[in-house]
Image (cartoon, rainbow, N blue to C red; front, side):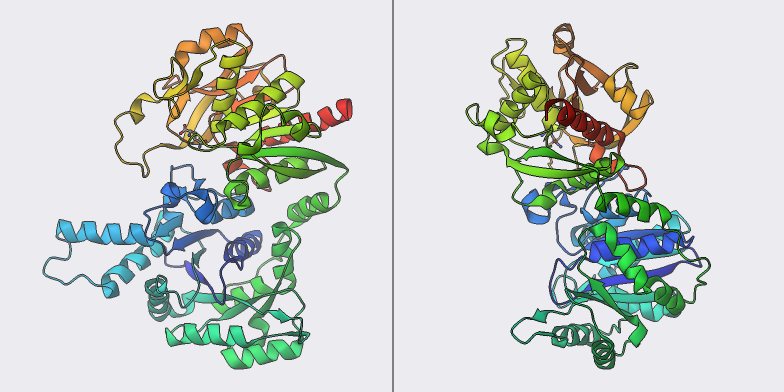
Length: 539
Ligand code: GLN
């Protein structure tokens, strides 16, 4: 552990979904802009080893790091805000903690001892928190504890926090995010749920240093005084966290509340220069004052839960800002798209994005939408399964291979234009066995993708088992769909495009994971640019 690292813990009270991830990312942004090196970690109390095997309807998108970890979507916020990559060590679940402890027990590391929640599980949690500061001498590690205080599942984490506060004293700080509901019948903000929530934390031996209070209305001085009095928190550390119209506003709201100053004071760190947020403010200004507006269809099978496509929608926002455009995203359930209604559903769209996914549900609709985009010249962006569907559509409707398919859905397909990667065939477990994380890719100069990246060497993140079947490459290229990106070690096709279409690109990787406020992803920027062009030429 680096000697100087300070640890900030973020807990949540009253309800879930208060936005601990955004508060953590926003605080990290403020501290980073004052010159501190900061990382953020998420501890998830569920028993899955990682969220890779979870249906997106459970917790939203599975985010993938460059080193191949399948993680909670909050890590996406951390990267988008900080513009610094996260890794395996930034997301730990109870399943992972127990797995490590049980493996140690089997190895004989605890020989002769009874293995218990305290100290063995709590020690493992503390090691996973400190591990980050061993990998890199961060000034500050922010650890977000998933769940809500009072949950049975999060007890060992809160206990680990209590122990670290005791062991490291002034090097630790606890921020509790809580809710101040507004009762419209009474016309009042209510502090009681917060009082109870802090009491629950105190019962576990943890005194919060800072309260971030989610509220729809301003907290006046008297109310702050009341909260401070009941919770032993200094009044300047009762921070208002007002609902924002966009998550990108939150760092500025929290800066106005002086959250960063309070935190630095309490940790005994110097404040140095005020945070330089010029770039951030410029981004926000462009986001709030767009010149253009366009419609993008996002076609997927999990559209009822928008968090399932979090990184895609954020990358669309980044691409929009880079083009001074507001993007109206139209969520389209792929199961509902048919040959009959596709024209009506998509006619107003300036760009069509077909999302990643698994399994057969909604595939037919995705293929119909892609056919529409290919035939009408509307910009099309296919990501992972979206690209695979574009390959199937082209095989069926251009190459005339009417039974072409992916072996994921039809293992006996006569024309398996998408097939399982060799390395995947020997996998028997589902968890953590896909082709995961960053791989390099070489782009053909002259292609649209190459022009977007301005480079022929890229590195992007993957999460899949199936790939373009190279046996068909020559036939595709003869008819106009080109394998434009290739991994030179494996020979896998990572990107395709149709050159005589205004913008028809499919990528086997997930560009959305790498789009940040500072670095909007070049493919999303280019896609939105093409959609603007589509609007100006076709209305
Ligand atoms: N199901 C496809 C595969 O495994 C695509 C995965 C994805 O879209 N992430 O290859």
